[in-house]
Length: 66
Image (cartoon, rainbow, N blue to C red; front, side):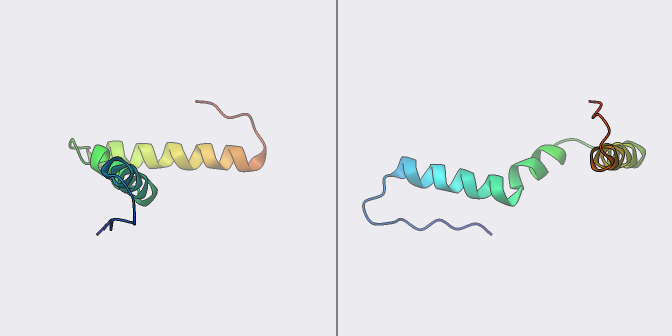
C-alpha cells in the first residue's frame, strides 16, 4: 500500500504529484488499466508471446517491428 506523508512546508499539490509518481513507479496505474476490462486467456497469451518476440528481436540486434 502506498502512503504519502506530508513533508515540512510541502503543499497539497506537491504531495499529490509525489503520490502519482509513486503509483506510476509501482506499476499500479498500468495494472488498473489492464484489469479495467476482461481479457480472454488466448488474448493474454498472444500479448505475452508478442512481447517476448519483440524483446528477443531487440536483444538479437534486429530492427524492432511495432
